[in-house]
Length: 393
Ligand code: SAH
Ligand code: SF4
Image 1 (spheres, rainbow, N blue to C red):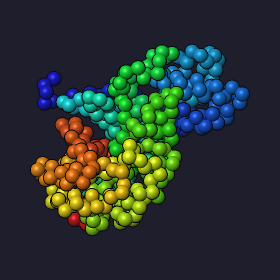
Image 2 (tube, helix red, strand yellow; image 1 turned 90 degrees about the vertical axis):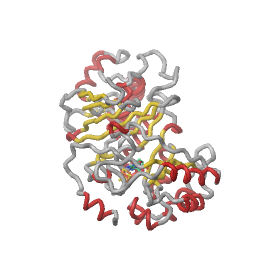
Image 3 (tube, rainbow, N blue to C red; image 1 turned 60 degrees about the vertical axis):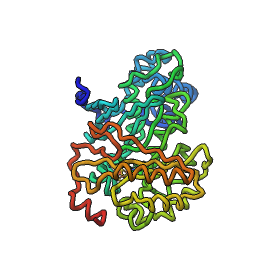
Image 4 (cartoon, rainbow, N blue to C red; image 1 turned 90 degrees about the horizontal axis):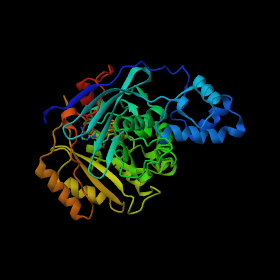
């Protein structure tokens, strides 16, 4: 394989069971799993213990075949296999960038597809997870925004993306041996920055992240999970209370006039309303700063004046600002800011006392970078004219 050619592999095409088939246990919270087992005949007295056992097999060791759950009786295993399945989304293809980034296309029930990206770094590995097929919002710089919302992902389909990546990275500990925490993990962080607006699918995202954080399973620390939102203000406090993960905000502009065009949800909850919600964010402390994501668009939002306004706006909020050089996609109506301007913008912020890392675009050769995701197979597309009209361009 030459350095310049990404690797594409078709993985498998096994037809997936339809929702009316047996119940899928993946994605059920502990409480729901308990209720489901009891409802389907597990004696109440045993049910809690069974939940713990099944949970450990599925989420700690990655086992999906009831027959292999050797601490359950053979008859009980057979009963489970009759009534339930343990299924995750099907990996349809995998592309590996020259920089090691992996982009997966996964198929979910109904034949829809979403993208998932794994980004290896020296000290961590981050999985960028999708929460919806498409997006109802229409941020004018985002490729996903050109795709109509098809549907919300279920909790099982969300946590299933993490399980699928652990399969691919071969990172499940051996059953009965350890928890997988002996060394640094290949998949150590999760960001809800794939396709969709996670706060418009709150309950499923919450249940999936609770499962991912559970100590007797995948066991990711809540500090290693970051939820990115375009600013669904009423759900922001709930994120802290019910999920407790880190928060990133797609801020992207310093005036309502510009933000209305870039992030149209701003017309519903403007900068002032958004900042008020962030100031009230319950878990705020200096070690748990909110990340402000800021996409750098040439001559649109990237002036030094913007940088100064940004600093004034976020005053009083423990924050770091993540500058994202715009990633172009076919037909995108913007250009990436010049490197010198990105540096100058970062400098203003840094001098005001904030960390201002510039996000290195990863996986560009396979269109895996931020905001480039979109399943090519979805038919419900918006026209370029529609995107421009919605953005008021
Ligand atoms: N819907 C959520 C999460 C998904 S997008 C949200 O909007 O926050 C993850 C991040 O990528 C967001 O900050 C988004 O604004 C940014 N992004 C979208 N399109 C981009 C592009 N073409 N170039 C760079 N960043 C982009
Ligand atoms: Fe949706 Fe986020 Fe893209 Fe906006 S940036 S269209 S909210 S995925």
